[in-house]
Length: 129
Image 1 (cartoon, rainbow, N blue to C red):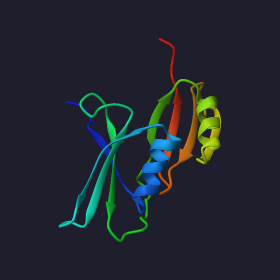
Image 2 (image 1 turned 180 degrees about the vertical axis):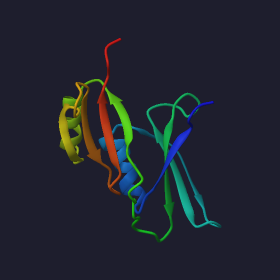
Image 3 (image 1 turned 45 degrees about the horizontal axis):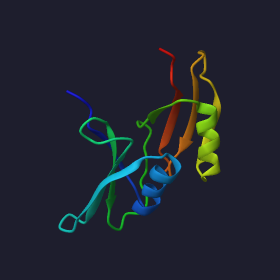
Image 4 (image 1 turned 120 degrees about the horizontal axis):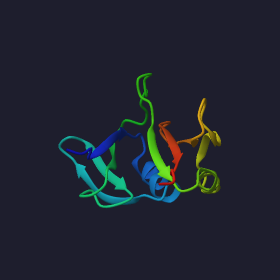
């Protein structure tokens, strides 16, 4: 078994695709409209779906906003250098929620950024092996 994808609802599909590709460096892997259901799905990731977990963006036509609720946490992305990744995301127009630095009560370097719909994304520094 493996995790295939995480689905996020978006109020503006083009804006979200732009964020995940231009700001976070993912690739748009596939996108399809479902006219009978009045929604569009877009799958994005850092590699092919056959070998990687990806993000599924769901756009329900005509819905511009969602309440994220209090149960949702975040998506985590491993990066080589959290400080450099945070700077690059800021330069590309991304919103930084928490600057890069050691996690609370630990030494792992993390940061948090926010996607256009308000979903938090944690950046975690790659641990040496």
